[in-house]
Length: 111
Length: 112
Image (tube, rainbow over all chains, first blue to last red; front, top):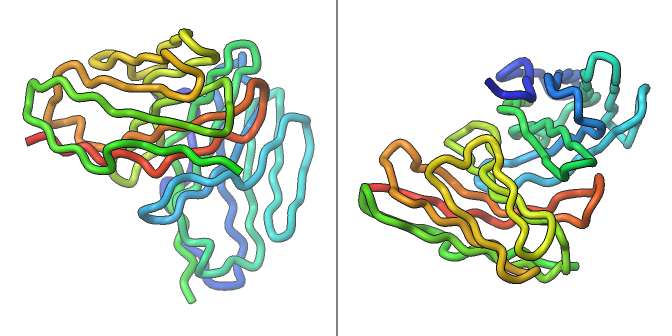
């Protein structure tokens, strides 16, 4: 079973809408969370990272983290068709250097 | 900036064949990773290495070997190719600690 679980598997939002993606780790050794975006046929690129409780905002993207539940969420406001991609959540363990990814959420933004 | 070069870009092998995928990075990063990505799915960690000559197993290491003889290179061997492991293999690297991981463009493996 994947130690990093993402939901939903796929999501369709209208252009200008809000997209909300979720991610939970079952490994209590992780201490850092990452969100990567992968456009079709391309390699993953980092969007945002978070390690402390609370919220972090960069432009249209906001990430939340609850360390007690090892749950993170990514929110994209004013979604654009160019945001359509596979969104991958990852969790890292500083002590071992291990970086584990989830199965991703496929986001489609409809014009 | 640096670059991660994976060779070959496309690899066609026969069932049961031993196949080697190569990865070179010029970021001077200590940590390197090999991931497998099945079509439309997430990344599964095969092996990683935190320094030259170090090897750590990931969650999907069975059926694979890896080698890190130099800081700049990390190779992955499929010990006996199977038809159900057709996928894209992604190499990645980073500096130690919680820092951004950079990816290569991948090797697409087809087993016939």
